[in-house]
Amino acid sequence: MPHYRKKPITIKAITFDEFVAYGLLNPDNPPNVQNGMPWSFKYKGFHATHENNDCYIIMTNNGYQTFKRGEMLITSPHGDVYPCDRDEFEAMYELV
Image 1: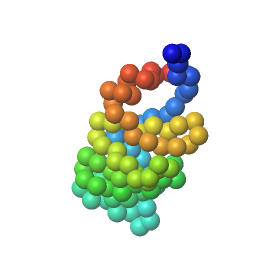
Image 2: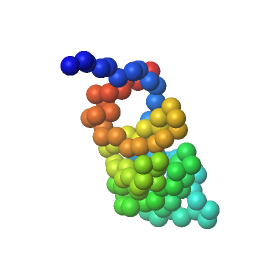
Image 3: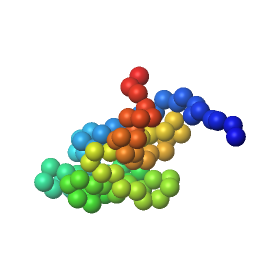
Image 4: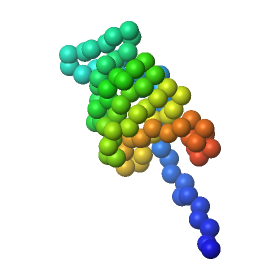
């Protein structure tokens, strides 16, 4: 059976707190911020909605996904966004 290696690619990724900070600077109109958390905003064209203080629901190309505190939000070279478990992220990616 042949073995395969993942091709190296460069991605962009942000933490949950960086995502919240982005939402505070780019809220939906009118802005809706409660307890210091943006209630809804668009990130890279994808709508995000506050679920609770540790989770947002993001509409992605693959449907609705949850982005939770402690995870990383990846933007692929094609512009898709998707959440990734922090341990998996650190195993697969390194800072460039």
